[in-house]
Length: 272
Image (cartoon, rainbow, N blue to C red; front, side, top):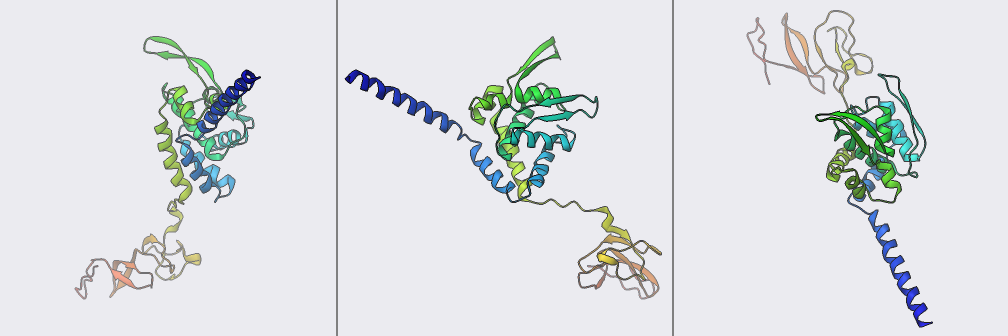
């Protein structure tokens, strides 16, 4: 009886030890970044957060729609159909993992990207992406001739309960490269990058003082080109002083400041 109790205690200790080890394995070096990215993503609409992160994979994945489909499919554990714009090749990808957060899906694609880049693949086909995620092999021309490349599959390794650090080690890529990429992706979710629109830079006539919506129109004679300011005026413009056109800046209050072109009649030079 005493031996039986002793044996049960030993079994329980082993179960507790290895079970805890497996649980703690998931808490790898990626965990803090994943937690931060998921919190930032939650501040946006789901489609908006996915679109922002998908742009980080260009030009590795050329089509924005393909990158978004991959992130959505991996996140929700649903099948994905990818089409190659060049060859028309179609491939169905069924993630081998259960649903995960958007940040975890991003890690999976980042590691798959690094795995393919090891073999000089900068713009993979849908089939190559499938192999990088779920495992597979292909033949590749090398300096010494043809070689067989075997990919273990990022999602396949993750489905076995391995941490992202362990997955990175298993496929032979450096985890710090993926974490560095995640740091950059974190700021994509934090900040809104505004690209100036060329539609806001227009020529405008002197007689038309205010354009609708604060944007100058192009009707009439062109007197200057500039970006519209808060009061609807252009910060760079041409203005007539004593019969001579001079260059200047229109301030937020609408005042005109001459930029260093002399008026021939008054011989007064202006500048900042």
